[in-house]
Length: 313
Picture (cartoon, rainbow, N blue to C red):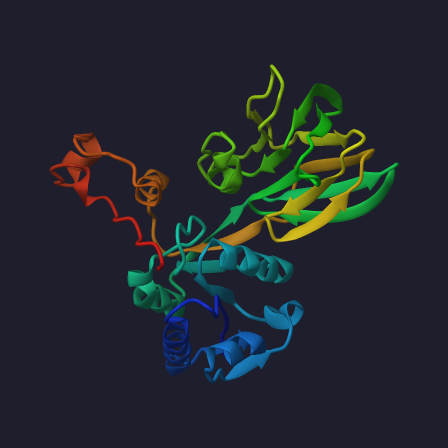
């Protein structure tokens, strides 16, 4: 039976058609059957050997999902890959691209790793999200990066009571509350003042957004903890999962967040320390570093760290 690889793209990015066609041709030449979503192939104006019509069927029976795009495309790919329990491998053709395994200049070598099946798979923690209104479940979802509960009325403040492990913690008047995974700690939660957590950490991060309260600092919880946020009248809220899926949350609702039952599987082709990833993605100043690792590798300083990707125009 031939191997099948799902290729997902951001079809409106400049130069994507040429890159996607090259990937399809390279996989086909290696005896691997590439698959694409029919809508993406049509938007790109390329010919794919196999196309599928919906996200629900896209990953069934494939070995891996290869994603060409930025973090938004990766998050969309995570939805498709997680449903079929297959690994996801991203090549950053966007802006920051924290979820991506490789940068644009490594596209060719990354595809070669896939062809050789030279990759390992790691699991990333997710969160499960449940919304209840007057005791009845009105929504069930999940997120790889974060769940954010935000006010539905721009000019007003969201009033909520936050509880941890079945006990009330504090009442906040705020713009919202973020519950993030370690993977999502460098995303929305980071912008809200939360800490960066290394991917190897297993924890839940809770970060209020612009809270008017004495006790309103980000919290790092055990992965076994559960978070409950009760939305008080009169202002309703909106729940966003990874900024992609949303549901209205009326006042008197309760939003519950816990560790996800199913993780997202990410394929890794190279062992790049997370510290180096932070330096490259955030353009952190490290000139003058004379650490032991630099000396052992024959480096004079930290200028040999991976270069940060250029932003798309």
